[in-house]
Length: 564
Image 1 (cartoon, rainbow, N blue to C red):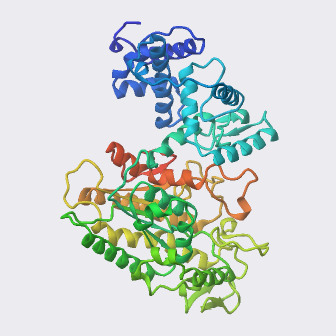
Image 2: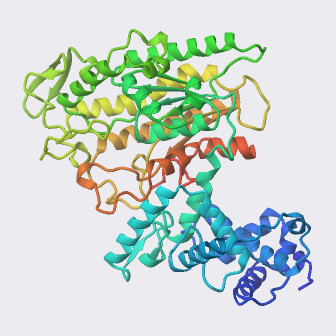
Image 3: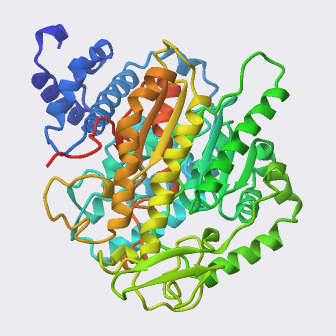
């Protein structure tokens, strides 16, 4: 096929690419169309991608990934047929031993019999097999083994039943699930892995950058802060329990490599005073770091991750136990190393120190007074433990995640809105003047704000959606509020300081006790951290501006609220 690309319709190109792909699988000679597409315009490639995957439900990003995968696979096959690759002739050839060959056969047998990061069959070109092995090398051995066991367990349950892919929502056979993500189809699993790798140290260099991550003691915040540290950034982490947070970071094997770039600050966002105190300490740290740098360049806050969230209220006993643990941990040398000297005045408090906070009880016609972390009628004694503070005591009560409007304690409602929306607004307002560059004309982001949100904060396409169904209104309204911070302030932040502000749904990584499934959640906290950092990664690596959007599954262009 020697026709010019301009003379061909995108649909015809897509049809020929499918034919060429099949020819490659049959070890026959395809046309050279794929090689000509190296110089094709992005608009033409978008059209081709649509004809290759013409389903409306599939995102543009996933269609593009599939299209590029097909084109590059054919190109590689053609180059291997050519046999004139100069680089290959320059490569030092390793002469395999008998043991090497035996190991190779075992690996190939594994790739043939098991679903891996890329689908491999006995008829695949050698180049595809090599790419699959290279992809496997990037995966931790323990993680591979763990995920494979989960996958095998999931398969043995019922290999014939279908399930919906967590990302694309298409039905697929369990036997076609991705190796490491049983809740994802193989293509979405590859897409997830590819996008996740953008915020790893091999791809993303944040040396010289400074980040603030709220709620960085455990789970999503912890994983996000670790990625930032390993990419070279200075990181400030806030937590209700700073000594415990510091101890957790000190347990990492590579702790000595980045410990000098991490500071932990105590802050309980159930009270606004701690938010303003955090702002003051962050500003002081930035000033101190400026004094340490022999340069005229001012030290800015480059990244703000509003991650801290309140969903369920911890039992008082659990909070008291956590406070007691703080006292035991704060004298450790590694803890003292991470806790800033500016934070000496912080003391964890039960219920955030609400010594005289009246919570009205309309149903009972009386007011309930919280004093020194307890209530006169034990208002909170039956609350389900939050994800961060686990206890061994059984609890038969249901959490506020599955309670109706009339059942949710007012304390949960107030604390959720304070932590999830009010404090992020304070941090955006107070710290934005210390981010980015004033009156800049740069086309590349000079700072980033990520407001961690969820799909609970958007209007559904269909009224009465089961995703809400009269439950957890307190978290829904707080997430809607943080989405409105993004939609309202993103344009101003970009125009005045070149700061890109977005809301990010990190995905389904954890669940309330009543909602936990035997197979677990579809993705983990590492995957969530990759989603949180994705708008930063594409801004730094590609210079791409993504601002004022609600991002889910590494996708841009989704409205913050879906219009009814």
